[in-house]
Image (cartoon, rainbow, N blue to C red; front, side, top):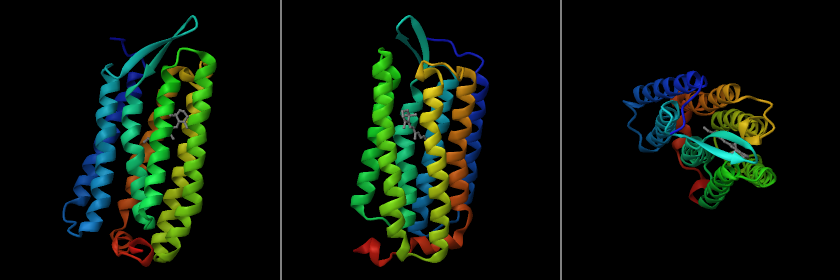
Length: 241
Ligand SMILES: *C/C=C(C)/C=C/C=C(C)/C=C/C1=C(C)CCCC1(C)C
């Protein structure tokens, strides 16, 4: 097993942050009896629970491996991808339920998302430096397609909903777009990109801040107003069509 370096500080902060987030959402969700509203709580609680477990896996060194690229040895946290392959589809599901999206839109979003994380994992484990960048490009292409659906199809489907639901959706969609676009940037500048502009220590800190914002921050904004969630839980013509 590979030993975790000084970046373990950020991984422990990540573990703690995700755990506090989980406990907070569980606390808020107790008392919620509406079945539709419970869906948002269940999904969001799973997101931070999975992330807390994967951060613990990374902090304790099990989630870390090494990849030989040319004459360099890269420390790769594979557990990130195990986290993201489950948590990013769940984040999209939260957004899609809020928008009242139909099944085809949800399936397309989740499909593109899993493809993005899977090709990202290939990029991280590929020993050839050129192929690494190629897989990064393929994964980034999937991200752009996914964000295109968020601003296009999904934003169109939310137009039939209540004004407050629309406003919450816009906030969460914009937050998601900005944060998610930063992931491939941190990746390519960090250890994985082999250019090594961002050392592992700072790369780990950057991913931790992004993960906490995209999961705990996102969940906090989503679950903050019960009144809005209640409106989002009433089926609309678009959702039932
Ligand atoms: C809670 C975790 C979140 C929101 C993670 C999001 C991750 C991404 C949007 C990752 C994207 C990547 C690419 C587009 C290129 C290849 C490398 C990745 C996997 C970092």
